Length: 131
Image 1: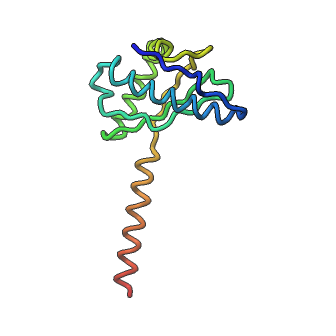
Image 2 (image 1 turned 135 degrees about the vertical axis):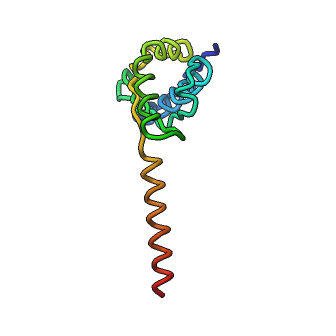
Image 3 (image 1 turned 180 degrees about the vertical axis):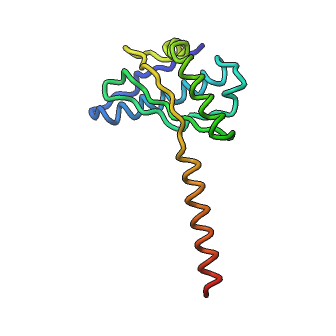
């Protein structure tokens, strides 16, 4: 496995550094889910966002899936049960003082966004018919 070096991520702003490290953690976790976890339950799962705490010791990982909401929740539950193994894999990928503790969550933002776009389209069509 290759390590991701964080030497280039130096910044005066801790929130900027947290955001950049979160991005690196996101990339590493995506790679881990593709290569280290060979479970078909998570094959259609995508990481949408990683939020790191200010001290970078905790990470909230948001996931979405092309499958149904129930399948996504089952994937999230499975990943939460495997989070210690995933954290171990993450520590092999990153060179951080602390490897963040992981918690996985279903991200319903994509489905909500799709619903909002659908409502906008329906409103536009109704508006055109009214004119």
